[in-house]
Image (cartoon, rainbow, N blue to C red):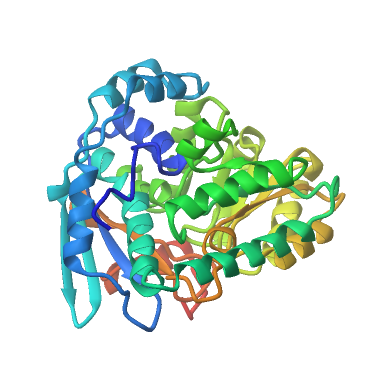
Length: 394
């Protein structure tokens, strides 16, 4: 793996650029810390030297004129942000890499608006290095054949004109960049009635697909420090987003604390302004019914809103959700690892999350146990107390 895994600064998810634009406009001096975590029991099969070399490659990347011109066609990307991106560079020195007894440690520190992009790039690099190390020596053809067989089964599973729609969310944990391209291209041509686009900007540009995405957890987490108060942080984050995008990119992420606490803040003004909500943890059926009931209590017809499901989905689970909510509310699905790293072996379960902003801790609690990444136990307890968080297993 002596060549760059990431070939362009567009080989990332749309929401990295939409959040970065908001950071540049509103919080240009915010200082952040991000940390890596692997949820797998077994160590990742890659070396510190490999990862450091790939990180150095990132520092050589620049957005070209054609890429910038394409970005400028997106209605929510501002002209002054294009000017900023023309000068934008990643600084590999912001990434601290350690490895002990096979366990990988990554800490990234710097201006939030600059280091945010390392998340998707590094996760995709780690995933591909691991895959290549384990399956790239003599077994690659067999793995690809198994992946193709599984992909064919999936693509044959979806009936035409079923009303079921999905988007590729598979950049960060993909088997490889080439396989990701193949999967998305296959979805485009074999499921034209079901496949609505990709979160990956490079694939959207090169394959002529709609780029899809809004915000990530880090946007809401950051307002635990940047907002008016900890208790108002979710509302503050959602309101700033509305000010930045004027109703565009209107899918709100609900589980930074929990769905229960989110709905307390998602008042009628916000519920009318946002197009819908995204599910990323907890029981999707319970979550969806809570969303529908919330809209009804606010006097909003749920059928005018959308729910996006994106938590560890396979087609069986997604189709069951689709059938359950048919006629109640519009639903769509962001599917990642199941599409881009389902090769007959367990894919790495890796994350890289914002843990500090301006020297203060931030955290995500979520609606599922085991997803919290914050080393400050006192702060986690403060979050739980502030929001009345009751998921004790988390």
